[in-house]
Amino acid sequence: MNDKSHLILYYKGDISALTLFCQQADGFICFPPLPKLSDILPENEQQPQEVNLHPALLIKNINAQLQLDDDLLVAEPGFYEQVDTPDGIVSVYMARFKVLDPPHQLMAARQCKLQPLTALIGRPPAEMELLRRAYTAVMEG
Image 1 (tube, rainbow, N blue to C red):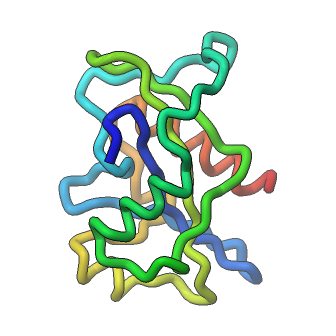
Image 2: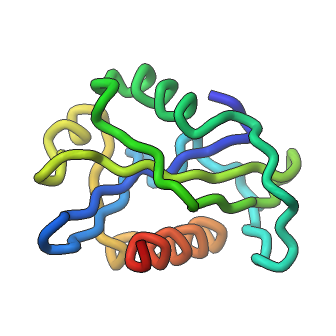
Image 3: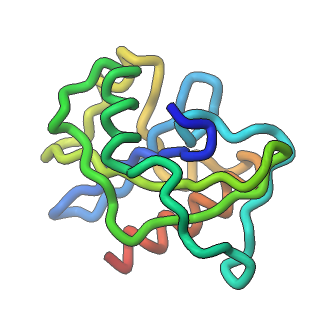
């Protein structure tokens, strides 16, 4: 996966609006994880969007990495954030699980778990702000 593009995976129930974010065994919510000392750019400081890696290609890469079916995830249109890292600015996109029920067992077999936002409190500040923005985008979408 391109180090300049990252992906947040989430599940949202169509009926209940239950929203869960995928957390890796090491605690990170971005695939690949953001480096330490990362800081999300304020919305008024973000640069015009450059496509470092199209979200569909990111999804293809994460499907290969986690051995997921190609039709399990779909890119979330309109979600795009930038994070300032020690190695430069990176892009963060979001992908949704296209299933009726949360894929808890599937992700547990891949050392990941689906967590509600409240269970992720205490993550690094950049991740918490990304989660806040992601949750807002999901609720507004």
